Length: 469
Image (cartoon, rainbow, N blue to C red; front, side):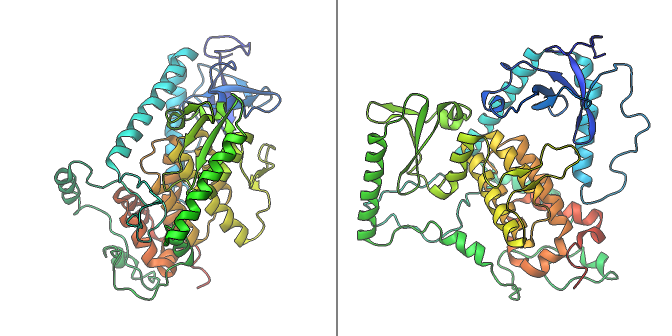
């Protein structure tokens, strides 16, 4: 029986579902309560449900994994204590178990209605949208481009790097807080030779190298250089003239192929390329919904082409997702019981790097456009690619940092996973990509502190990839 004493699988009743191999309480839902974008991902025989504790919608099936909930049972009795032994998944396991305890000991006994939880989730989403709006307000504004001006040519910069100022609007207060905790803050290593076991404790005391440090033994990555050059502004009048003509042609093409009311045109990139996407998918993003315009010539449309991001390349997998609720590479055997999810076409290390870089960029673009379901999908696919190569860890971390203004469960999940990933391969990252590691960590004090704590807690567990050296 469930918490209300019924064994009928009716809407609003509470059951126990095996989620990621562990029992979690869920509330069965109708098809009107979850967001429309979630409903479109349904497969045959699946039932929508609200996962308590995490307080998000998931799909369940009426099979052996869906059990009646016993309100008098302690679902933690006799189970080993999670998090007693640090390992690569230590932080994630502890956080997950805390949410599971909240689910069984607080959320389920409260017996809240579906209406209550729907309002809770809607209010949480609205609060995060407000937080993102405030964060965007105090971040560096997007630079508008006027293709007719000669003086609108910027220097080369890393794509999407628009970090929120660590000081924000109150630099003195924040600086004081950081200064107050400096003495107790865990310290990270300088890039250099792999520490020996005997010297590990002493070397952990040394401060982290600054981005302009004097260690010249580490080569800059060609991938970072590639990112820096991806969006170089046009450098000649003739080029700008051709670009302006291309923009006009693309807009005329959108007029000639004006979509029906079920589609919306989104103009993206410096060529103003038109992408037609379902209006229902646009409605899932408050960011996109707020920018919809309507004219007789174009119908419903959104113009993102004056912003540096997203580029056409960035938006292509988003367009694919908005039409198909997925983007390539797709999962293989994801839903088969007992199978380990992996991605189609990912065979060797190069395939893995290419897929990881794509998923990182998709996450960054989804964060920018406030597409939470796409964020979660990108994070899940990144986890299926574990372990990432050292350089790809840094590139994905940069993508996550570029999404700092976006508040979501998926972002928190990705950052926690990256802290563990950077921690696992910390010494290899120092050896191979010391300067990039230092630069990446210096961009986010909170991320740097989390990595420092992870390394300080168990430095011997941070030498993945070094066994053969």
